[in-house]
Amino acid sequence: MLSGPLLMSLIPGVVTLLITWWFKRLNFSLLVQIIPGVLTVIAALILFYIGFVNIRGFEGGAYGILAFFLIIFAIISFIIAKKGVKAS
Image (cartoon, one colour):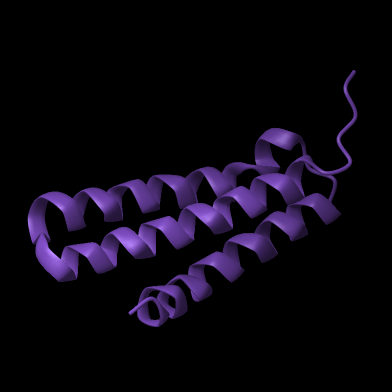
């Protein structure tokens, strides 16, 4: 039951992580580095809302699980962006 939403979240999750890593490598500011994670969180919230309000039932639950995995990828993206940032 979890494999479908997990596999569906792998593609945007890996893309989010790669873009964050690429921004980190190019030494962009922290604000630019967290943009992929923020967009992923927004997409996850929209998917959760659609699954909870519009679709409902087991299919809506799959949207909720997909949103949960996307949030996990966004948290990892935030950790990648924050790693190595020194307080000024």
